[in-house]
Length: 343
Image (cartoon, rainbow, N blue to C red; front, side, top):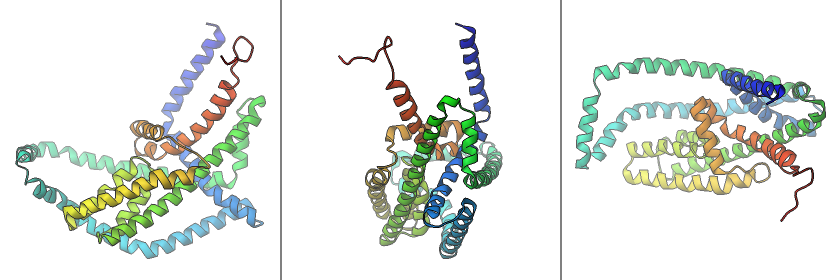
């Protein structure tokens, strides 16, 4: 092994360790890039139709978002807060309701006694420290979200300068290719964000209408949770089903819970196999296995932020692998100095 190869391998190891130590900083930066792309899509549409500068278009977009958010908040927030208050009173009743339903099964009575006997004061004492840790994590997440929003506005305000900064860090002969890669990653990420936003809106309206037709209480709150968790495919819709099922069980009956489960099953499969593939057919096509493995890996390594940013990262990595690994390396692979001949 030559000295240059050894030095390159050592540099890669040091770079990997540095990236791992700065993983939270890189995660915040990538989240800001994703949000900046979401802001950049309407900016480009506005500038195509109106003679606006980028700062003016960004200000106009933020004003429109603020007005729309204020209108939606004034219309929906009071009812959502009321339903959250009702849900907070219902959650403590869920164990008793489940106990009443499961009490009809004699085999579960011994398990219930064991769980009740295990709930001693010594085992409940660490709960306070866990709650404090949760509060600290929530405060840390709030600060990270504020940093992501600030960085996203700065990136959307002047993306050209940041692109030139990234190009300056690449070799001169590869800069045109890197510029093409950045454009394709931006297009794929923008298409994914637009498709998932439309999918979330459709899921929200369909879930709200379906739960209202089934006369399930807290339909608005349940539909809002289902829409937000649409941005976490595979895992999110399944987790979102638990809330309306629990509400239907508490304020309804087991039959009502089964109706809600059937409704969510139909909506979830329609969104996963019809709506989302149709909306993303022209931008990006993620395999379900790749999406699930990415969410599991980043969720295990980085927690909830990694889970939320797993799919945008996979969208970018898929474009890079397709263009760099496949087109630039594999398609130009030569054997013995000549192009390989098919057998």
